[in-house]
Amino acid sequence: MKLKFLLVVVLLTTILGCTKNKYNLTEADKVFLNKTVDSIYQLDQNVRLHFNTIDKKFGVNKNTFSKSEGFKRQYLDALTYPIYQKSVDSIWSVLEVNDSLNTKLLIDLTNDYGFPNNRRLGAPKSKAYIVFTYTPKAYFTEVEALVNTEHKAGRIIEFKKEYILWHIRGRKGLPPMSSTKGEAIWQKPLDRKNK
Image (cartoon, rainbow, N blue to C red; front, side, top):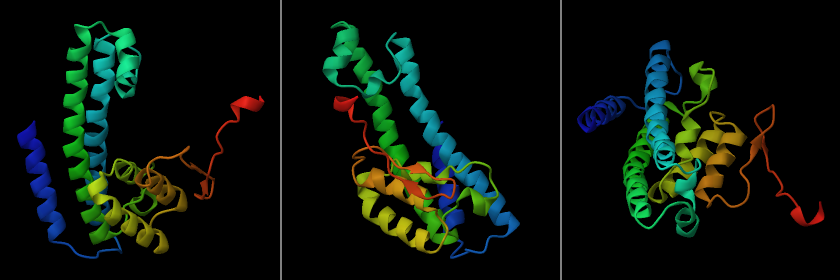
């Protein structure tokens, strides 16, 4: 599987290196971009699904992998916890590499073709911006500048731009929601004290 993945990355990098600034997309460009974005998105999501598999295998609630050590130890005994944590850590290490490669590929695609949003590609669902919501810190500055440029050029809507920037700026507070026109709507935290 690693060899296949490496071959796909090399092939995509080679193809992407041969094209420059094709903002007016042809039908062939759209087909290529849809397949490429779908592949990046599927790879991204498939790796993340392994966390659910680990949680299920160890008999803990979904998303336990993301909780604190103290929380996990409440549900896992002293013998099981290290095995569980080693499994979770192995997925995190794969994700670090995966997120870095996916981010770089999407940066290259965006530089060459403009941001591949679903409207431009004629796709029913937008997937590209989700990849940028897992951008590693090493790419924060580059992705922030790129997303702002693409928003000014009209190739990324405000909601998706703000959602990506919410990630880059530390995921503080609740993420934005989208209006029907694609504007960012910032949610206010619940006031639990004054119910």
